[in-house]
Structures are given as C-alpha cells and as structure tokens.
Amino acid sequence: MIPADPPLRRGWTTGACATAATRAALTRLWGGAFPDRVRIVLPRGEAPEFEVSHSQSGEGWAEAGIVKDAGDDPDVTHGAEIRVRVTGSTGGVVFRAGEGVGTVTRPGLPIPPGEAAINPVPRQMMAAEVDALAAEYGQAPDIEITVSVPGGRDLAERTWNPRLGIVGGLSILGTTGIVRPFSCAAWIASIHRGIDVARATGLTHVAGCTGARSEAAVQRLHGLPDHAMLDMGDFVGGMVKYLLRHPVPRLTVGGGIGKMAKLAQGARDLHSARSQVDLAALAKASGVSAVAGAGTALGAWQMGGAPVAQAVARGALATLAGMTRDSGIRLDVVVCDRDGTILARAS
Image (cartoon, rainbow, N blue to C red):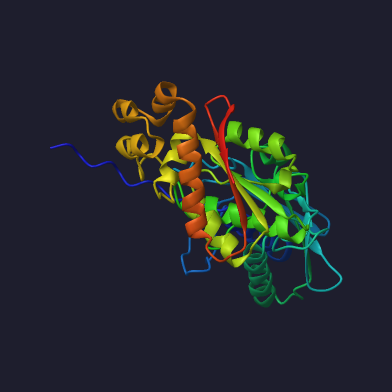
C-alpha cells in the first residue's frame, strides 16, 4: 500500500507577522523587556505563537521582527523578516511604510492613494494589540506603527504590486492571518484588485491572459498599459464572474492554443488537473478530421494549421459570450503559440 502524502503545511500572512511584531515591540516599549515569543489571536480565533527574530530599542521607540513562515506555499515573502517599529503618536494609531513596504499610488485598492500598503485587516489586528496592551500597561493607545521588510523592494518586483500602482515595496496582507498552500483564492483576489484599479483609473479595456507570452502579445496588439493587464492565469471563470459585478466596457482574453481550446470547450478553470482538451471535438469544430489523433491542441494546430486555431478562437469567444450574456461587455479572443506568436483572433 502506497502511503498517503503528508498534508501540506499552512503558514502565516505578512499581516499576522506584523501583528506579532507589533505586540513584541509594544511589550518592550511599555513593559520594559522584549519577549522571546509572542502569541496573537487571528480573526477566526486561532492563536499562533511566533518567535521574535529581531529586537532593537532606543529612547521612546522599540522595534521587533518576525520571520515569515509561509508553510508549504510557494510565497515570494517566505523567509522575509517583517519588522515593526513603534513610537508615540499625537493621537490614535498611525501607520507608516518603512523600508521595503509599498505606498499606494492609484485608486481602487482597499487603502487610498498616499497611504502605506498595509491592508485593512492587518491594520485592525495591529490596532487591537495597541488597545489591549495599552489597557494592560495603563498607557494611552497613541502609537505610530512603521512596518518594514528588509529586501522588500526587490521582492515586490515579483508580485502584482508594480502593476497595481503600489510603489517602493511589498503589501502587508491577510484577511484570516493564515496562508493556505497553493491557494486559488489568493490568486483570484489579486485579479479582483487588478479590476478594481482598472475601473478606478478610468480604463475602458482590460485583458486577461494565461501566461507571460500571450500577455505580451495582447499588450502589444492593443497598446494597453500595464495596469490594464490582469494576471488571469487559469482562472478565467473567477475573472469573468467579478467583471460581471464590476464591469469594464471591453475585455480581451488571450492565451496559448491549449488553454484556449479548453475555454472553447466550456472550461472555466484552465488548469491541466481540472480540464482537458477534447481533440475529437476540436477536429469536428475545425473541419480537420485528422487532428483527432493529435496528442495536444498545439499538435492539432501543427497538423491542421489556421482552421484549427480559428476554431479555437471562435469557440473561446462563444464560451465567453455565454458567460457574459446581457452584460454589454465587448469581447475578443487572441490565440497564441508557445512563443507568443498570434495564431488566430475572434471578436
């Protein structure tokens, strides 16, 4: 009997780490000494414990750091140290972006332009720690919280932040405090934020593509700015569902012929584990019967040429039209090969 794979290990968001660092720094500022470990309560009641990896203090300030553990998720911020420096403020809790934490520059995100890219739930979690410890130590809950991530500016180049108009570093994120390995929800949430920014900046045309090469081809074809490009990946259904509630006048969907063949056959999740190309159906749609014996959609195109690619484009457009019926969204589809060369279009 083959043993089952061990369950994937979950991790902690940057927001949870910043909250733990806030608690550690405030304990030093008001209590006189840094703790070795801190425990915080997450929005759904979990109470994880974090080891304090960095501690420094001076007259009227204290700073603590927590190394982010993303579990088994391939998170770009895994291993980064999230630091928080606390000092007194003139009233209430104030948030600042330190080294490696971005600043919002475009409307449409949960935080307005000009503010540190620290999302609402992490702000609420950190403010709750300020209130709790202020009550414990008999202090006024007036604190300036500066969050920094050494190396965060470089890490942010590997995220959606530059496209969303978040400059200078990473965002401090998390709604539950927990990173779940290979989370589709996290990717789809990033697509949503891209749509929010596009709408807030007045764009009338956005594009969702399955990969970097098809994205570059579509961007060149239509002359679209970076923040019009939605990192759709395999999640065409999640993207379209959000656009139906938050519409943009025009949508282009682009991708390799294999992914677009799945869309043409009605799939809304284009991942290889969740949808497959029906080559017999592709042969019928293209009128090239021989391609039924091809191993892949790309192989079918190599055998059948333009009629195969055009059948894929027409079918993908029909699927999208069915998904967006009565929405008024203008649609077009771009089908590419592996090098990003456009094979077919439909609109």
